Length: 186
Ligand SMILES: CC(C)(COP(=O)(O)OP(=O)(O)OC[C@H]1O[C@@H](n2cnc3c(N)ncnc32)[C@H](O)[C@@H]1OP(=O)(O)O)[C@@H](O)C(=O)NCCC(=O)NCCS
Image (cartoon, rainbow, N blue to C red):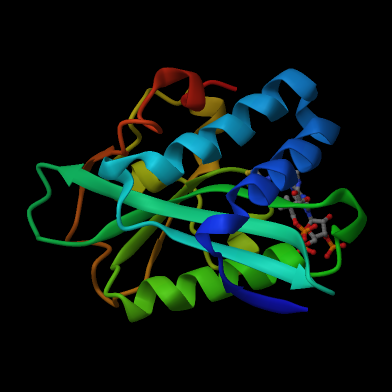
């Protein structure tokens, strides 16, 4: 299996991965919404620079991860930050390490381009395996929209530049497309 940056002509196939992966857990309507989110993020100028990475098996795309730019309002230090959203692996290829490899390669690419912090809103037991820290709010990072106390562990952060946690803080603002309230509700 190869993990690499995606090409522009692969966008439709990438959207289909999200539709098929999320259909299983979220139902068809929400899955189509997530596929559209990916489509729109590819066009969103305020999301740039994006990092779009695919897993390829025998020329077929089987997984995809997307990172887009975020800014931190009133942050006392100047930093570069991104958010991981979304991540999907085709059902037949799940639980074989593809998701973990996509995250790892994504973080490597981000670090290479000087990104200091990465956020994710997601499964509380899954992302800490890759080094994300539960409850970014307690570390000083408010999410774009209110997250109820019982889900606070789902809002996570990871530092790619040592020492940034503890210095940076503030309210996270995503790209125009991702900064819509429907993407922040369960
Ligand atoms: C979540 C997802 C990306 C994981 O990809 P994957 O390639 O199956 O993940 P990996 O093979 O790296 O890791 C598999 C492990 O993660 C665990 N895992 C998968 N989804 C999980 C979840 N929602 N919560 C906790 N653990 C989870 C599996 O049980 C498995 O555990 P094991 O290694 O002990 O058997 C994939 O299941 C998927 O596409 N799901 C539908 C879309 C989705 O939910 N995306 C994430 C949105 S936050």
